[in-house]
Length: 400
Image 1: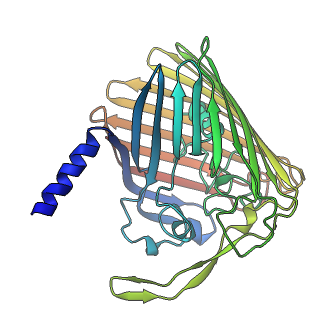
Image 2: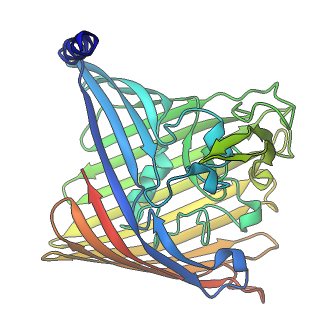
Image 3: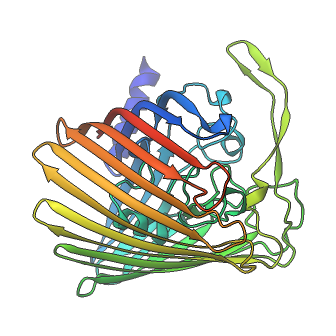
């Protein structure tokens, strides 16, 4: 009893000097995909992240005086529909990525910020391209947006030759998405007349040559420039990112050993997992992405547009562009959304794509909504191969 009281007193003492804020979002519902030939991409199940990423955000802030503050953010992406991480073989919840570092698998950083000098973040901050995606349409990275790691990927060409980055090259959800980069530094300028800029840098490990060790090493370097304009009803963003592999980088992917585990009394044997080799850049290769986005609000209606490019240093490997237009209309408790996206694949694969996303939210409160999403798409419109599919989801979302 005495030890408990001492512990509580110590905790209260710490809380007097430092406060940690917990916020987050939960999204879960029924999702079904039909229409494609590949049986592995057909499903009907309860699933998370239909409209937004289920996540817990731990943050802290300290006022240093003189307009200067310090703080941190740690994002834990979690899956409310799946309790045992060993049930999954890939993805943010479970699988290879689960065994190679922090459980905080989303955005995370320590920051120093001043209204007059800007903001510095060190760690794994979100990319400016991810932020531009949020300005280009109201579906974010979820169903209907064309920014997912399955189906239509607007930054890449065919799914087998996309070079997106999520955490590290070769990550389990890397194909076709530019989200964030480990071991990076990002600086954002102060806002001046509605304009602000950002610069992100992540150094590469040019000496990394092995394909079966240290999956968490950066074999690639990243530089990114971004610019935003926000004034009244108008919001615009542009970002360009270049990813470059070291001269000694291995081109055949990275393997790691998953240790033996015991779950609910059942033991699993140790195994070796090879991270997504299709997303690994060859030695000396590079890939460049651009993303431009704009939206404008008129009364209860917001109009959106976006354009992207993705170009590998060997243009025959990846050379793609995309365009989209979207709209969101608020009518009482209802949000009505639509997004139309086309992808032009300029490689010999000629895997052009198109997507029509539809969405409806019924807002039960400011923090809780029932939703419906529909995504009718085709990833191979210019070939005889089947690439058409339809995804539909219905569920609940709650933020706190």
